[in-house]
Image (tube, rainbow, N blue to C red; front, top):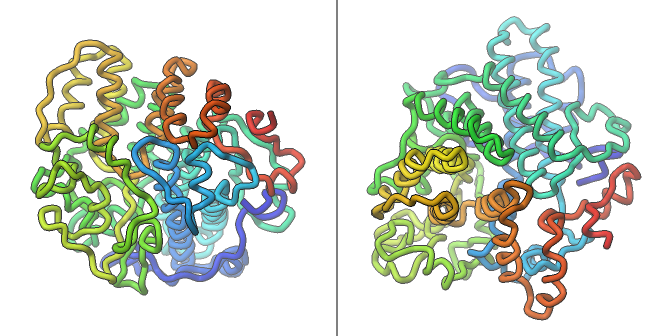
Length: 496
């Protein structure tokens, strides 16, 4: 992050329009505005300016999508990171060689999205006063989307760094937000929950559904159901299991979502934007000014080999040959979990073409809801309910489910099922950390084992004495921010 002491983000160049900004009904979206224009009061005069800024906010959050994928897998147990350019800094982190000066330890993209959300919510009130076509309902819905993006950004930040600066006002000048200290994880999550409850009541629900609406528009903008899915996830992390279950029910009982059938499952990834299962996914569209997902540059290119590589031994133990999620029905003993990003077909494995390198990044789909529900019910001692919701993704993947009676065993079964269902979708590290930290890190041995399994063999003897410190599971504050902001205190683990 560029020093919070001055500006949270650096120069934001005018970019191409997001696929989600293509709208065949309602009003047209305007060209995404440059950062310097968003900070000028005379920019904010009409409805189109608000939607241009909304596009800029989504675009900024989209810029963090590759990092979201990497951080969700990097320190976990199912993928390896190549230690060559441009991912050598990430590879060091994967081996538990973590330093505040490591260039990959960088939270600036999340804060950039946060600041654009804050800017949008500050200035759209001026447009409401100036342009009568920008109604209260429209302003509320825009605020709801901004609160969602800000909340999701903070949810990543607290899961990665734990205690972080909480910025809820826009950067209006170079002297705004001077020397902001960290807020605790509890304080940040309380702000997130407050914001999401407010957003839930202001957001669009089905206004973007059906008719002539582009599916990319429905799934690429945060609606009421995306907000409730995020609330369920936050409550699960926060060990508020009844509320997590209740918000799952709000999505389930809406009747708008379900699991795709087995024969349509691969459509989640190609072409994406499932009108059955998808709840929120960040959009890429190679047909719109070459909006390629950056994973295809080096991380998961169509060819040659990926810099993110499956640990085949672990994944082969995780997936049985009957499991649809091997992504390789012709040779199920050789799982191919990256096929969901590389191919247009599950059966043939035909590679995407050079102008199809635009896989969306899925943040929430109905499978998240079923497995959050299962996990919450298990912690609430509802064994039957937890088994029922766990069985749904298993059955879709062509697996049977034998009910599990013991809570501890069911907890691990749900964790393993999430590993199968969300392979290479950036969730594994956060899932294991969530389970490990429950009840004051009662299950921390599972994350200790995971960290040691990924560490350099020469480091393991030293690392064994350090991984019992739970602060080691979080990243250090970037060194450049510590140096420029005297009120930022380093994660104590990295000062020892």
